[in-house]
Structure formats: C-alpha cells, structure tokens
Length: 256
Image (tube, rainbow, N blue to C red):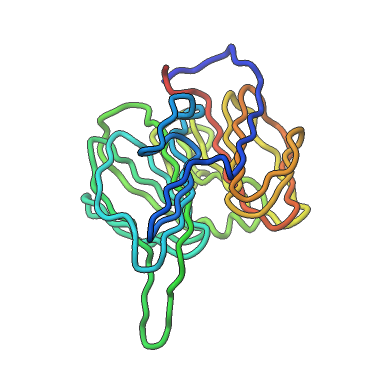
C-alpha cells in the first residue's frame, strides 16, 4: 500500500455494459475489476478498492462456504435480504439500510445466501441484489472480525452517509469500522433533483447501483455505471430520478 502526491487529475467513466459478467443459473454478477476468471492486468483496482461486484442471487440459492484471507469485505444490500454465516460464529441477515463488514484477517470461512422463506402463507421469495466491495487492510494477519449496524435513519437525510471507515475523522460517526485508515465508504439515497458533493481525495470511486444521476463535468450516469476519479473531487452528483450511490474515498493505493 502506498500513498502518493504526484497524481495526474483524471475522471474515468466506466459504463455498466463494459463490465465482465458471471451469469449462471442462480447468479447474475457484474464485476467492476478483475475477478475470478475475468482477469485483466490493466483493471485490477482503483486506489485501495479491488472488488466491486454487483450481484443478484435468485431465491433459495447463494454462495456456499468458501475461504477469504487478509481482506476487508463490505456488503451493501439494495433489495431483498442475504444470510451471512462464518467460521467465527457470526451470523446475521443483511438487508437494505444495514451496513456489514467482515475482516478476513488470518483466514475465515463464510457463506452468503438469499434469505428466502415461506411461513404460514407469508412469502419472502425474491432475488437479493447487493454490492460487495473488497479493500486492502492496513496490515496482514489481523484477527478475523465481523460487524453490522442499522443506518436506515441516517440515509433519510439524503446526504452522503459514512457506511464504513478506518479514518480517524469518522471515529464515532461511521456506521462500521474497517481496518484501513486511508479508506471510507459513503452511501446516499437521492430523490430526483437532490444533490450531494463528492469529497476530495487522491482516489474516489463512484458507483450507481440503481437509478440515474448526473456527475458535474462528466455527464449522465445510469444504473451500473461507475466513475474512477484521481487527484480530484468536490464535484456535485445530482439525481435525475430516484437513485442510490456508493462512494469510496481513498488516500492511498495498492502498491505496484
């Protein structure tokens, strides 16, 4: 991990249709960066963000138990709900407005499945749509960990709400902590006409998982579009229809 002060300003728009995809019977996954068999040496990360997967999982299905190591994994659900279980004894249901972080650390096994059920005529049987994001931790070999917290009330403000952060300035404010002092994730739910201003940082990643917005100086962004900003920030994001955005602020990058 390296910090940098000699970056060239850049605004790099990545359209939804340009993303590689993994589509099988139970999963429709779009990858913003190299992932699994979709490897591109020119597209491995932006700043500290290595994975930004936009996943839809059908009812009754999901990711069976699998391992992770030395990664901070943040999951953000947009529709439906997702059941998490791991080898450290953590379990929970993640739904819209709930922030969740898993620190893989020295090693952890976990599963994630669509929380579909039918009880006494009450049916919860819909796909779950979520974004999973991975960032590098400050150091390898930490103890595995898990945290989740409801932030639905904060999202009603319409502003950028800290979802996960390791930055000192978010102590007591961010919903959940990640083990990287150079990174923070924000979310905003915007009605048509509402605006937020991006932070300023060496690296920003703006993702539009639903709805449509306009980014000052870059133009219209639709569902699934993303923007990688380098050595810039402060631009206004304005919703042209009801939208949700996810913004990573990063003050370091993965070492070459």
